[in-house]
Image (cartoon, rainbow, N blue to C red):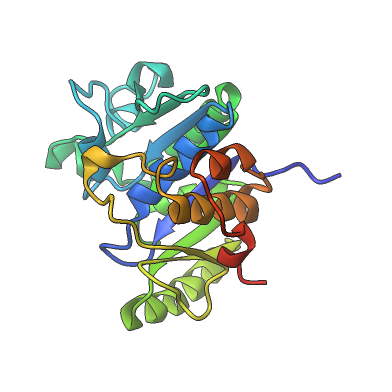
Length: 248
């Protein structure tokens, strides 16, 4: 029997695709099902994951692949509050430009692969919030993770980017396991995550209160991780089928 994927890279194909928010909603949904989840930030340039937590981030994700490469990963993890049975621990990037540049080198990318493996030893699932397949750390994540998804907004720009990045993934020998459509339904998407009114950072996670969002996130878990999140859809009061969000 094949082993279900435990490490997953969610790669945004364009700015504003909602990759960071989707990654956190997926992590929260898995935690609601009693699973422990680590979220690692590979979006070193935008550092959006840091907006979802408070307090000092030292070491941050970039330090853990450069100056603090010998420090245990746990020292850079911050709990993301979900009130769920499982734990969501995030490792955001929050770095000055000098360290940011060093964190994007090939050596740092190899260290990032090691951090993914380290997280997989302690957590049920590891999710990587990754930017375009145009940086060393994203290429490392795509190569190291069990499954890879492209996250694309349902726009012409998103559709065009999916084609480009799918070809780029083939160039580096990485398989794309699914295309996740956000902000509407993209024609070639495998999974559709509907828009939600709970877009503010303070509203995250919203998947347990928004029925349609819960079903969309559960569909992502089913396609990418081979996990059925009945507890999440039940908590969200979902009346529609998860299958409506999965393109067969």
